[in-house]
Length: 404
Ligand SMILES: Cc1cc2nc3c(=O)[nH]c(=O)nc-3n(C[C@H](O)[C@H](O)[C@H](O)COP(=O)(O)OP(=O)(O)OC[C@H]3O[C@@H](n4cnc5c(N)ncnc54)[C@H](O)[C@@H]3O)c2cc1C
Image (cartoon, rainbow, N blue to C red; front, side):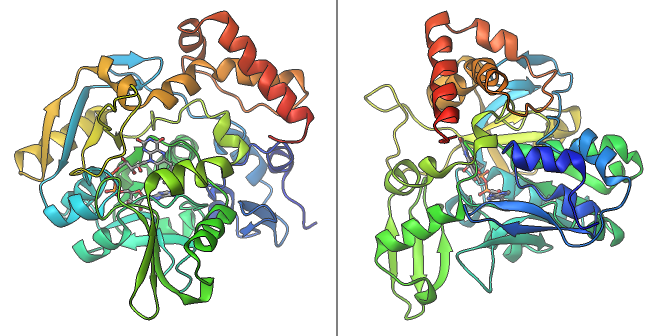
């Protein structure tokens, strides 16, 4: 029967699908396809394998969110960490091209160049359809530089996972927190593949916007989609501009505040609004924008030289960053974890309100992914009752109005 397995049907109907592609990556009877709202969702193309349902119950991030691991410090808002740093890639091209300080690209390249990994599995502009995002497999410096920068659009980096594992070689995986969490849970069910990953890297994530958000940016830039030869959301500076390079070699651009703040942030899928680990807590290393404070007390998006926040989350991740520092690949400075909230105030608020939002999902009879081991109660205890009640009431209202 060409129907998704029961767990995935609940996930898709409950809008808790993150679009990571794990289901398609383990079952040839499932493919990821863009739905009418511009999100990547699984579709059954043949009868799914009998074991897929149990695997999805254990590892699909729409059904179960990977719990944080042990570390010397575990912060309810920022997750487990060995060290908290700011830093940047010393390679000037990587620092400039990347999203913030180029830390993730520099770490991946370091693993390739030292022979610890054979390729990087991540996401980049689709070379054939530049407004879309595709799986990237990088084996050289050029590849890594080309894939640097954030793609604020649906991307399913796990959608070819088992085909990837069928090829020889060690892999560095870079993905969103949900992608990294899905991979961790998959590896807990299939431990024979654990050694194939030299590192799992992630970043703080405010959510995946619909592909329709990209369409709106292109419309705002006043160009036709067919004119676009290349498109990036940011980078080439920090934060850099959403830039469309046209076939005639000219380019049009929109500031980060206009593209992310004005358009993309309003197009984020529901799963991300109830994400209890938007900080990449299960990665070996997580990076984020180490924004400087603005006059309003909120981060300033004035152009500057890229700087990342770095949390080394596992012993392996801490060793990797230490090696990259010793090799002169990364320049870092220690950061007091109390400073993170000034750089990432929205992430702090999101986590404090998470259990209030989950209460809204349950009150309205929605499907709630299993979320244990992510310090939700501690994060909520940090917030006053009234804002939490407002968060529940606000989400109940939006759900009842069909505006998740
Ligand atoms: C949807 C989204 C939301 C984000 N929200 C936040 C946020 O709230 N706060 C914050 O500080 N940072 C956020 N970021 C991350 C931030 O933009 C930087 O990625 C982070 O600062 C690391 O920077 P870097 O210079 O080290 O990364 P880079 O060296 O530029 O490397 C980025 C890596 O991410 C991979 N990648 C890019 N887009 C995707 C995607 N859609 N799915 C999977 N992998 C991808 C690339 O392949 C590349 O390997 C977000 C990124 C995305 C894609």
